[in-house]
Amino acid sequence: MRENVKMLEFPQRGDDRGHLVIVEGLQDVPFEIKRIFYIYGSDSDIVRGQHANRRSEFVLINVAGKSKVKVKDGKGNEAIFSLNRPHTGIYLPKMIWKDMYDFSEDSVLLCLSSEHYDGSEYIRDYNEYVKEVAKGDVHE
Ligand code: TYD
Image 1 (tube, protein in one colour):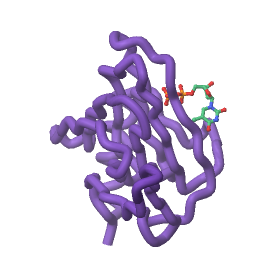
Image 2: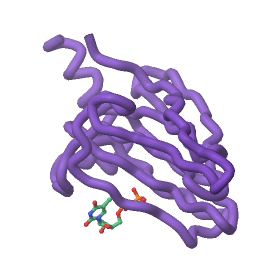
Image 3: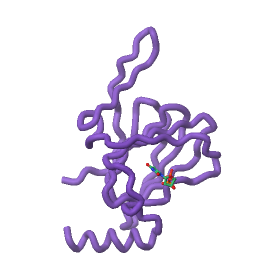
Image 4: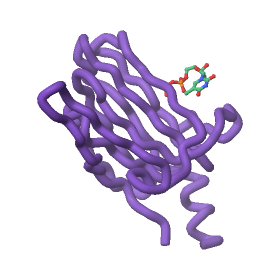
């Protein structure tokens, strides 16, 4: 069964020395982590993302500051999630359109991915994405 977009809560092992949050592949996120990257220094009026991935799944965590993610499924459904706690993340399965925006000045958005980078699995044209979603349904 394909998993859906959902918020994840990670285990915390903080103590009087400070906070500690744990994210383990295949345990706290539903895939093996092959790549991490992080985004910071984006102005509040910048929109990032604006693509879907044919193969990559992601978990996004604002480890500092906050941002928002708008997701679309290419069939007319969309939702907006606020990322503002270091111990929560959003899971994004493959073939989900995502926009990241409303970055706070101190935002550090950590992205975990199930795949190594491959530019050819990114769909950056929304009309093309909708077409591929429709095609995918026929074959499923
Ligand atoms: P891009 O996908 O546009 O970033 P965002 O999703 O935040 O809008 O990536 C910006 C550039 O960095 C683009 O030229 C591709 C490159 N890039 C890599 O080489 N490896 C990576 O893992 C990522 C995420 C991007």
